[in-house]
Amino acid sequence: MDESLVLPLPQSPEFARTCDLLGLPIRQCKRESGGQAHVWWQVQSRRLPLLGRVDLISRGPVARSPADLDDWLSGWLRWHDNRPLLLNADGIATEALRDAGFWPLITPATLALLPLADRATLRAALQPKWRNRLVRAENAGLRVTRHGVTSNHWLFEAEKTQMRTRRYRGLPPAVCLAFASANPGQAVLFEARNKGRPVAAALMLRHGPMATWQIGHSNEEGRRLNAMNRLLWEAMGWLADQGHTVLDLGTINQQDAPGLAHFKLGTGAVAHRLGGTWLHQGALAPFARRLPRALAA
Image (tube, rainbow, N blue to C red):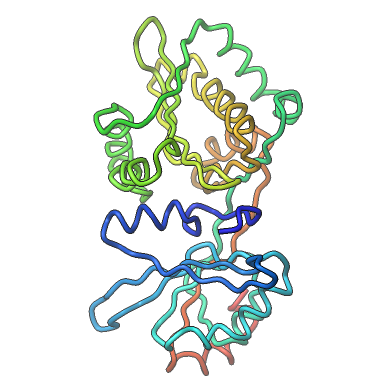
């Protein structure tokens, strides 16, 4: 795989190795020229009641240029066998998807993507309130450590509890542990302790030039000490030192979780709107092409 393509987690070879370990193999596809991949996409498949096999391309395909994406969309049926395809697109115009027979299912999510650089540049990009909280955390006497993943770390149980109480869906801790097993050294835990007590932890998954903040948890004491600001800051600098260029901080929702959105964007991250989730199904495609443009936006 050509690592000059910046691949999000679901499109990374590291994620494919994880799924293979879990018995959920992924098909890796590419279009290349001159020995260089111009378009890359990974396909997950599931069997669903009534529908049979359904394919999924999550946050892909990834291409070097908009023209490469247009070329992929015009010819994707040549590699696909006309089974239902769910496409969580990024960078493809809604009009082009509609014209290709895709039906819109889920409105686009927005991510916070943080460009990584040297520490001086990163610090200068912090929003003033975020930087002030970081300074307080740096002066709070916290002990920050970085280490590999173990299945009995308290962060995973805290994540399970948080997913139940806040009723959200994320990558299950079991998948994170499989990622660590399938990709040695690529899953890194950052932990903050105050007077020997754990107060916050964050899990970073590394995949090519990109990294993903996958899990973060801070208890009441950690929140009082702004421990997550300190952890994320340490992670940002360390990941940049390792050669990563982008840190994916996950989705943001200004309406339902404004505090978390402000925290992520306070790092200097850029809001990046995805293309929504679309379905291509043979019998539905002619109707999708006639869908009013306003409904496909």
